[in-house]
Length: 228
Image 1: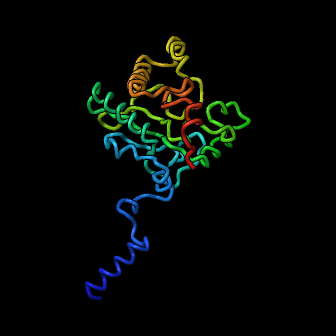
Image 2 (image 1 turned 180 degrees about the vertical axis):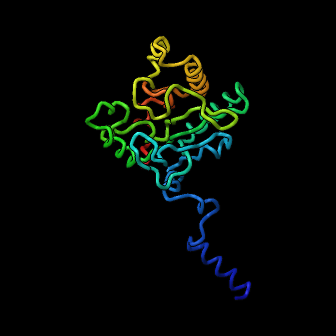
């Protein structure tokens, strides 16, 4: 083929959309959908934020891989900007440390799978019912996050992320400390996480030390759209 013919062929492919735009080839169908709905990759704002999506692995409360084609953490632009600010606050206090994101925007289809796992059990208080509009993850306005040190190891928080039990509750931490169920180090680490996240505008969910919402559920339902 001549170079002129190849150039004409390339132009035809571009016009027909056969050649993906820059960056699209690296995105899965779910990630392209999230991007099309206005969400942003948090690492595009701050590449130092670590991401380890727990629902892309089976070691979560469902025992299943729920994210088969989601490998990056996407959030509403306002939430992503706030998370980058929380990272700045953390690194100002502890240079070399980093936030690590375990879950961000969650499609409602995945929310349904989670709800099906806990409905009719005592664990249903930890999962928002899709029939009632889901939770802030489904709007891209919530993030599950912890802290890791310079080596990339998560610092102790008293439970693992995704622990569906009272030891994950924030409001009962003084009692857990008095009972010896939560160490001073773990409590201090939780308070550090809350300090930087709240300093950036997030609020912690009382039953999950790792879960932070940017706005209330009422505000999300009124002003924002559910992510599909």
